[in-house]
Image (cartoon, rainbow, N blue to C red; front, side, top):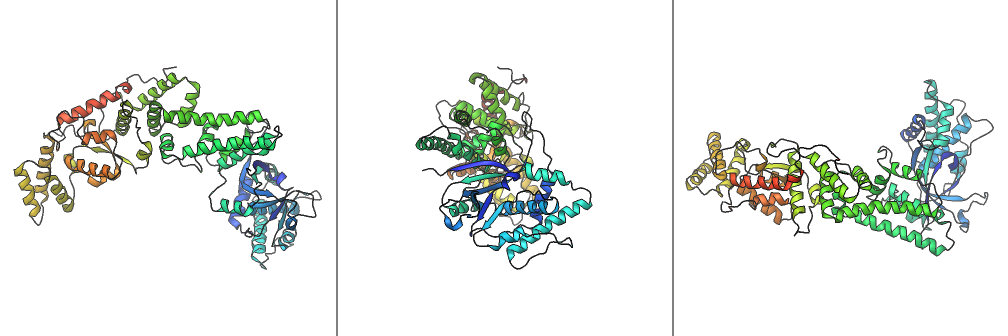
Length: 588
């Protein structure tokens, strides 16, 4: 049978009326002065604002309290003096105790005969702690007696003194507004109440505290969907269970799919790492929440979840599934996959793409994607050079579209391998003369590697003799370097060294491994890297395998003809997106 879970947002005014049992496995109170003052400052500095379109106001959210109702049969821990439901406080004791201390201070210092409720805290082993809390007070000397008889009393009394010192200081500065502080504390300071009916409270505590099942936005939203009150119109308990099981199974399938690196990194930049990946769906549904709030997604979702109607719950769940289906359909469709994947990497916002897909028919949405891609590219490729910011995007799109255009090939561009590869460089295919090694050791390595590719015996012999000398003179090396570059390019002309026809996309690791090596050495390194499992983009591989070249006899050369053929392929592949018309969204 599925364990019951529910979640709600509770203002402190309601929390103060509840009773809690603190089990023995909980450590004692340990909040420091800084932690207590941080909470006081947050309350003091919070200004509730009207929520547009509702009668509500904004509120300040505390971390969740995780509780379990104490069963009446558990006589050993049943509160025999009260008819209140008692909750075992599994996680959040530090926050609950601090809330008690603030409420107690308000009653002592600001209230007359009419007091605010003070939440009931009862301890399994630290029996005297309950009375100690009730008897805390500020002395006639305007100080709290710090009790060092045990560690718990010490921290509790220090925290109470911190509250009094903080209020006294702000009063002296004329900054403390008593009524406003109390109003925010009681009505606009709220906690996320996470209730579980699981019998083993220690198991819940352990899971939360070792981080295996953190109470993330997603976990709290899941509890919103699964809570029993959603299904109050269903009389049969088995039918309720089936409904909950259906949602839980859908949830698990979506969460599992989003764990796939291929799926996830097609949709997201590598730096976007939410607490749980299913958070992405809820973020897309509600829009972009306030990133400063740890539970901002849950708060907004909870705000729109005020319903007891099973039909409304089913509609909200269908909205989640529909959002996921959109992403899944994009992933499974090769055209959507490659174009959207490129746009995400080029800086387009996923939220905007999802919104556009909802508003447009499929053909219009594909036209919309094409317009977005055109906006990322230059008008012409022949004006693009090495340091231009758009070079990397052009090279990336050439790789992506080359895979998309191969109708015989079912494989996709691996965005996960591209994004997790430690960075990418735009690299010269054929070395340039102004990139010579700058120390003798590197120069000797460069000459030795290059010598293996030289077919000119006279030049090869000069390299050999230079390497045999104790010192390699800089002038001699520069002469050899220049001649080798010319020899392996078939021309001495370096005027086109920074043009697109001499540039390729390489992962930073491969690029660093051969730096300014000559073409055949680079080719050898790339072959070895790919054999070892490294990802080499398809167009980069085609370049170094000379698959764009009509004449493959000169395997050690990257000639002007090779460049021309490579550039021609780039123009052909990218032609549909090289438009001078920069008006976006021209298609409906």
